[in-house]
Image 1 (cartoon, helix red, strand yellow):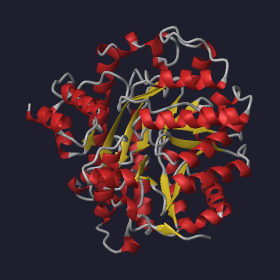
Image 2 (cartoon, rainbow, N blue to C red):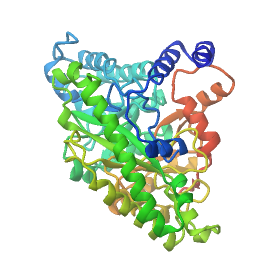
Image 3 (cartoon, helix red, strand yellow):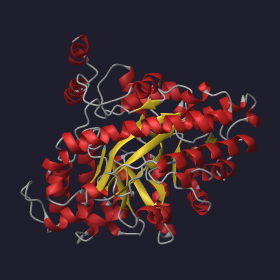
Length: 497
């Protein structure tokens, strides 16, 4: 009861943030999942982490509605006819967003908003006014940084207007990804790069890679998560390799014994979360999103996450000198690839009957970390402060991106002078995509909006929180924790050209 009272008395939380925090406390006050002792031990040790999904999952972690279908047919439940103009289109989308849940209780995917809105553009000045108000409304009401929109790959009038409005608003919500392919014109890509160097978005997804795994109907949701449109992910649970590695006698023991055991236990835990959600929570039997065909059970999968590969490799090799460590040593990099290859092999042995979209398999995900992580690098990233030069960093990242269809990404922080040389960044982007990077993000040192791990937060909001003031963006507290514990503002600064 003291925990509840503390939430109620917390003056740094807005009313809405208190309501959500109290709801989470209520959910966590019950136990409905069947968890064996060995799995629970892994959870208590931090090797397995459910990323605050709660003790009683009653909605999928990530929901990815088919917004195109919604705009074409409207919604009987919401009493909406198909929109006929730009104002009706943005209004209908904003209404639907309020009724799309996720782990955050806010939508984590807003649609490929340029293609959604393109056909409604008659007058560009009017469309810009509507789009700017649309994005402003999202920032002020969907107050969580894991809200994500997509644009691209092709150049559109709506895409250009979205980029222009993003620069003017300089908001941290929504996050945006440009699906980048050979269909993306250099002019559109340069406009996007100019925007990201101003406001830390959009990021860039390798459209060809995602199509090869998901088909055309895929979305980038939440941080950088590849998921099927019309479905989503039941759950995301992660394995902390940095906490598993110290248990091993050596690398062989880690790969052949500990890793296989931890995968088995975590997969069973994910099965139990999915079982309760599908069979007992009633979500798929009651949601209007299902009844109106905006999502379908057979379009869902689940995400098997991991963090801390760098720390695990360095621990297993006893690597102290930078030249011997992950990201710099061939031996360390090769061991990293061996570990992830074995992880993929073990995860693919498991079958879950409800993950129909992915053929019963869980999809690997390089998880970005949580605010309380200390000395644990996101996914397969090189630790902050140890980053190599840009080309070497990209080549290292490309070793791992192919393993993670449901998301992996790397971040490059630039000196502010690069704003005058966007073609240089475009060359980096093209090279990264060519060598097999799945997802890449840029921002500059002087931007108020900064990329924390996969999500965006304003420096000014984090400063307010430190002073005990309220901020609208509920993810700002996570960003502040990551700044203090993971030193995300200390990433290697890349120089112009």
